[in-house]
Each structure stands twice: as C-alpha cells, then as structure tokens.
Length: 210
Image (cartoon, helix red, strand yellow):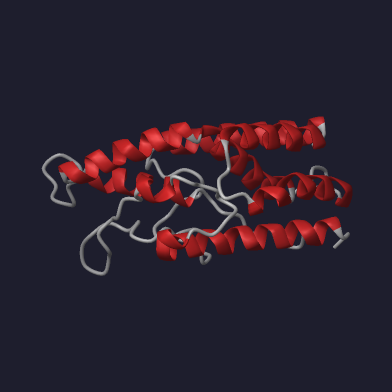
C-alpha cells in the first residue's frame, strides 16, 4: 500500500467543528446554535452511540495508516489479504449491523501482531487526548479537512468566506454503512466514498506485494 488515504471521521469532524464555533468566548460574538441544531446534535450523539462498533472499526482502520509509517509495524501482504477478506463482504451490505462491525473488528485485531496492537493502542490514546485537549479538534481535524479531498462540508465557522455549519441528519443514515456510498448524503457521502475507495485500493496494493 503505497499510500492509504483513510476516511478520517468526517461525521465526527462536522459535530466537533460545530461545537467549537457554537461556544465563543464570553463577550465575543459569533455563531450561535439554534434550538433545532441543538436538537439535531443530540440526535446525532445518540445515533453515533448506537453505532459505536462501526466507529470503533473505522477508527482501527484509520490506525492502519499509523502502522504503515513504521517499517516495524506496517502491514505485510499476508495481513492485508486477511483484512481484505474480512472487509470486502461488508462493502456490499446495505447496512452494517453492530454485530457484523464488532465481529469484523475482532477478526482484524486477530490478524495483527502484539507490536501492531500496541502501536494502535498508543494511536487511540493520543487521539483521545487530542480530542479532549485545547482546541478540541482531534483526529487531525482542521478547517476544510486534512489537506485532502475529504473535508467535511459545512464544517467551517460562519462569517466572511466561511459557510454556516450544517448538521448531519441521522434520519438519512438509518441504513448506515461507511463503506457503501449513500446518495442521500450528497457531497458528504461522495467524499466519504472517495476516502474508502482509496483505502481499499491501498489495501489491495499491499496484498499484492506493492
């Protein structure tokens, strides 16, 4: 896998960015969340909790990019083949159930070595610290995305040159499968699909020994 471009939690970035701009410093002006947006954020929080194994799975897959930066922990072709065997069937599922996400997560971790699992654990701990630290961005989030084509639409603060934040609608994600394009999500769904297409392409390249 010459370059694994991973989906970096675009859904979480939208909510994180909105939360950041919704609470300006005392006495400062700025964007204020409407009651409707606050309701939508709470709905999204509940939706995300209901899909916690899905997000644990995608977080682990994002961590594979971290493993790939170090020759001591990068995936071998044999490991990539096994992970592909676990993930490929999920791409055709109309909905990724929590049982299937949990089982896939278990199978993928079983493929990894102790050193790789430890590196993943450090990545997760560092990600949690960044999310909870000053700035609250986390996961490499910055306005406009991570320097690639997958920036979250509507994630920039309102004001001159910036779009007003838009909340994702949980009602459009009842049959959520992060690996399958969702036309209902518009540009957001298209960008997510592009990320995962790149991810699987990279994994296939590694499986073939590239």
